[in-house]
Amino acid sequence: MPRKPIDVTIPNLAGKLAVVTGASDGMGLGMAVRLAAAGAEVILPVRNPRKGEAAITRIRQVSPGAKVSLRSLDLSSLESVAALGDTLHEEGRPIQLLINNAGVMRPPNRQTTADGFELQFGTNHLGHFALVAGLLPLLRAGRAQVTSQVSVAARRGRINWEDLNWDRSYDGMRAYSQSKIAFGLFGLELERRSKAHGWGITSNLSHPGVAPTSLLAARPELGRSQDTPQVRLIRALSARGILLGTVETAQLPALMAATDPDAKPGALYGPSGPGNLGGAPAEQQLYPPLRSIEDAARVWEISEQLTKTTFVTA
Image 1 (spheres, rainbow, N blue to C red):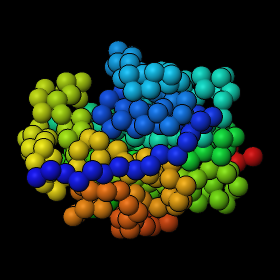
Image 2: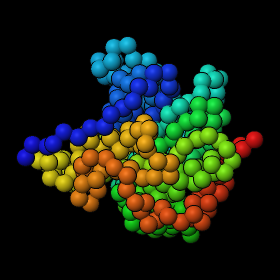
Image 3: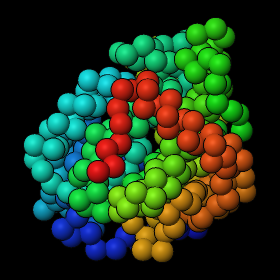
Image 4: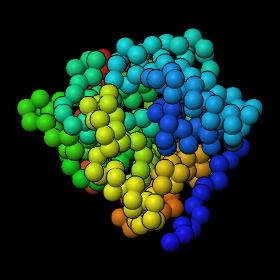
């Protein structure tokens, strides 16, 4: 069955600086392509320079005059996160758009970051938490819109407060859900604290639904030598237009949340089809695990302790 065209309108972004994590391929690259085409200068912080150069080539194929450049970032290393912050501070450019898109999902066995955190919690949440903390002065100077990409996996589950690192009983899916719940709670708390302290930053959330992205694809560096059965099923359903989205439609909620003048602070945007798995992007109700203000404050405080970072309010 042919799909109905789904898209969003990106306003003119000329003169704005955008940073998109996880933009070397997949949804993140699609976002970077669209932002550059709308006139934004786009920074791609990447772990793999070869993939980053290929991404720049793709962006310039669409927009030959695009202003786009690479920086080095490994979100699983707090040292790397701090180094990117130092680099961008030296450059001194206010940031108007930050899309926290990068992530890892369900390595077959428990793995840890360079700092000893469970890989998904450390990369998806703590790495981005430390990145936003490090970039806070630049985000404030640019009165930035910060959009953080969560997941339908944040709809259920909970924070494993007694064992955040899953040292005692690792469950890949539950650990992934925790990482996205924590990340979502952080994004909402960022909006509350920005408003309370007058930071001038706007923060909201997006999720891509379900689409054949690279999250469940073969990732040898994660110990996954071939595609999972889940991603093969997702590809088949997506290709047939059954329930799920495509890589192209999955990027739209984040683009809407980050660029639509009517996008709301503290809101969640995702696909509006059945089960919110695919379809046109729209505002959605916050998932139950994301609604606790107390949990959000607790995540924030624990994350400051674990990453040894603080959000300077002066």
